[in-house]
Length: 264
Image 1 (cartoon, rainbow, N blue to C red):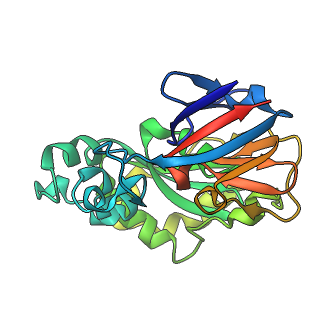
Image 2 (image 1 turned 90 degrees about the vertical axis):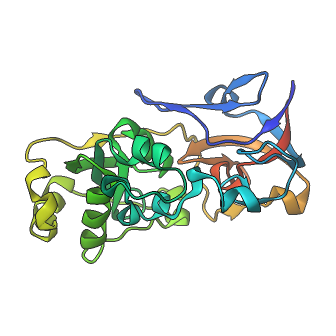
């Protein structure tokens, strides 16, 4: 079976085991069904996720001009504390920014390689945690806009990590943590503007990834450099495909690349 399409973040479904899908334009692959199968992946070309032109990808699946123009790549995406839609101030497209920023947001704790703080729209729970490879997570604050979530994250990351060690996450070199205790320890550091939105009573969410074999020494695949790669798929965690020979491939980090996929 052979497929070709532009890489985008894999959609997921949470359940007893997380289900992963890969959109190949004319085909929608359930990646869980490909575990223990040999896969060959080949780099073909580029396709910007915004303008859909054959242009080299700059960042986040966008060509360079789109990255600096599309509202989907505004700086507030990565730095929520820079959100200004609640002030009626435009960055690139106020209507779009209001649609995203002025909705409920969650500040959460997730444990993937370590306990970290993060921000996501409420509608993206638990998708955001899955994408980060977290095996457990908990909401700590639910606020009405992205700005409040952003300033809360900035305050809390003075006391807890805000990054994931991807190698440690993929090796499954993690320890269970009591996130309820962590939430209580961090409560006093929440900014005054967000204190009323603290979540008193909820429980951890546990997530289970389809991995048959974790890599001992993960080797990141650069498909643009190698041109092609063949290996047996043995797991999926976060947005990474894990292969038997310790090779790992970050689908999200390669958004905008057009690839061919052959399944033996």
